[in-house]
Amino acid sequence: MSPVRIDDKNTTTIAPARVVREDALLIFGLGQRYRTNAGIPLQWDRFMPYLGTIRNQMGKETYGVICNPDDTGSYEYITGVRVSGFPEKPAEFSRLRIAPQTYAIFEHKDHVASVGTTWRAVWDHAIADAGYRALDGAAFERYGEQFDGRTGLGGFELWVPIASR
Image 1 (cartoon, one colour):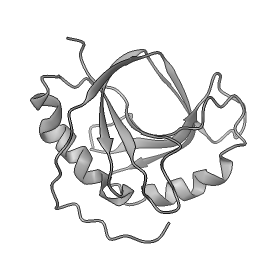
Image 2 (cartoon, rainbow, N blue to C red):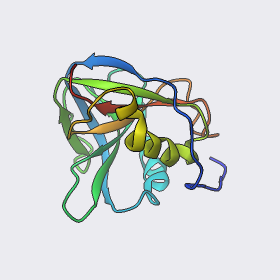
Image 3 (cartoon, helix red, strand yellow):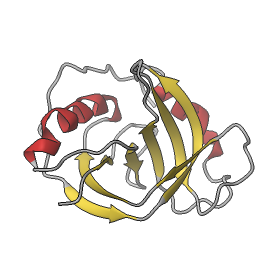
């Protein structure tokens, strides 16, 4: 992907979320701990050669999962795919089971480099403005076939676990 300057100071307007109840998800991929998101693009670069080779992969979507936060402010980010069962290889990959959950799904239509601005708007006001309450649990980016990893364009979704109404 071509380098793009990340400007985290911009604000963004978010379209209303749609709400979906999702079955359990098994996510298999590269996991790494972060305090900032600076290393995440390189993590995606390391993961991409595995696409199409992961046993038990379901669908063509890829996932960027934010999970396992700790008291120091760090979190685990997993670049992965959904699988029907965890394969044995690559052994160094992370395995994450996400329980059935209700999600508020927000669209990110801009370049992937500006996703931090959209996440910030989701956490700062979009969830509360829609009348939802976020739950502790894995939140994730879901990249469909329309997303072009070479250009960073095409859009994708941000999934946030919420309490059922």
